[in-house]
Image (cartoon, rainbow, N blue to C red; front, top):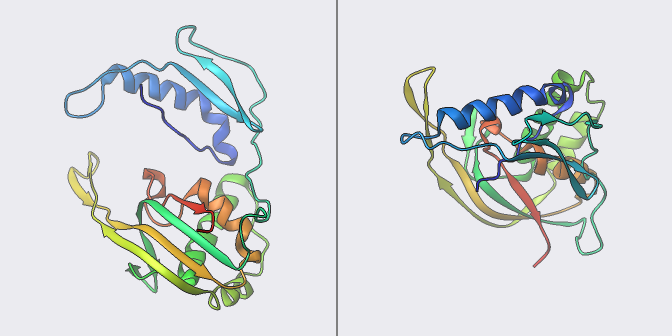
Length: 215
């Protein structure tokens, strides 16, 4: 049994039936070098704290249910989390650029610049709205946040591009890092980033991170 997670943003939600069909076809074609086949069992969508099934593989029917976007968890830190301390773990290789170069020595303002860029592009191209925030002011505040501890390491990863017919190197950093500073203004963006990832290769699953409870 394999579970896929797919995040659809804005207008992309209208294309859910096409994604379901693509997974059905992928199962018939097979995965990997050995072409291992699979059958799509079901598709669920989040409804509050629960999940609701909208597609059953045996019936081949997409239920006509409310597929309106659910709001991401952008609330302020819970009582167990401090707005002046932030612990992150990067679960998949993360490729962040600053001044045209990939960075392995992460600073908070570099993370936030990349995160703000991704969210603003998603908002404009997929939701039809410009992100109305003080970009310069927020970045200035982000530059005041310091690194408390970093346990990041570089992880090299490759994928084969059938379009370019060659291997592509998509290495990035993984691991844990802690920041300290006035973080309250950045919290909604950080929480949203948990869902949409950050950096280059996000559509491949790169740049996935989670916010950890203080240790």
